[in-house]
Image 1 (spheres, rainbow, N blue to C red):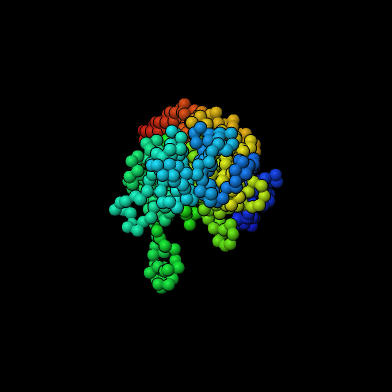
Image 2: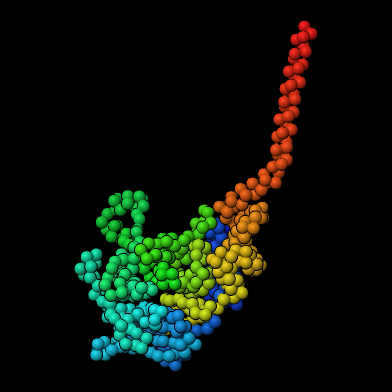
Length: 490
């Protein structure tokens, strides 16, 4: 049952800003699951994903992980973990068994080690790129563990003279171009060519200042200005490379408007936002947030994983939520939460997908936590995949199953409406677009329905016009004759 507007505020406080210690809508799940409708009002939903277990260092037969900061699933199914506090990389087999531990490498004849490795990426050729943060370099190793190359000390006229290269996250494209998120680098993601030369920035985010903020800064004292927010470009937090070569990246957004970017090879953000007209959907996690103590403020999106079929999921460190969107920027489902119960997080830092499971790395617990899709989540994933492939007709049956579980899921109504529109059932399509709050497609269906009515009744309309015209002509002729007869009698 959809939540009423009158009781929305107190429920939002419990739902969005609480720590998720007790689920209200799913009693067997340790967190609340919800979504936002057209009006950005929250309503409870079935759980799309539920906890399936956790894996620690001791479970793998090793020592506990200490402050791990990143995780990557390679194409062959291996899982790589940056065990930052232990200065090592753990490599798990596709069966999630410990395969090897990488604590160092041969650096041109000299044994070398890592210091606080905080990010990693594996290419199609199984080349391992590691951000060796406190050694101020990116280390690339071949599959056999031998050194491929080292990226360090980048130089350029656009870099400050005192800039210290401290890489945090890394990804690599099909042309061996390397993209690095570096500490205290606000101009964008640093790009390096295949020869490890710095070529510039990708995805620079322009920060705009409102007229009100400009006026306030002019009227403020020096002390007040020092306490105000500095308007500098924002920093990136996570990065993932899609198969098409586009970079999905997350960034800090203090206003909670957009924390996700899709960068083309030119470094331009081309991400799609919701195509439903007038829908003010934000690509930044929770729509509502409050300012206060723990779990407050906008979502801090720290990582992203591209999951095929245009679906991507982002991880919110603030409240431990996982938000999943389709390629059009429509939010699909929300799950996860912070707490002490099994299946909740303390400090989530990285997210990946493996064999349909969602995996989250918790740096405080030193564990990988896994989640599996419920029927509700699987249906949504399948329907979105069909829609992404343009097969709206096949998606109808799946959308109908989704609506049986969640009658408020507007995207399902919209998908069914588009299928009906393509089939020429315009009147029925109008009904579904209205339920899906899709004004643009409702207008299209309405125009086509109107044209259908005119087309179906064109013969009657033309006949009526002919009859009316003939009647008017006869009437005119009769009146004319009567007029002449009257004059002749005189």
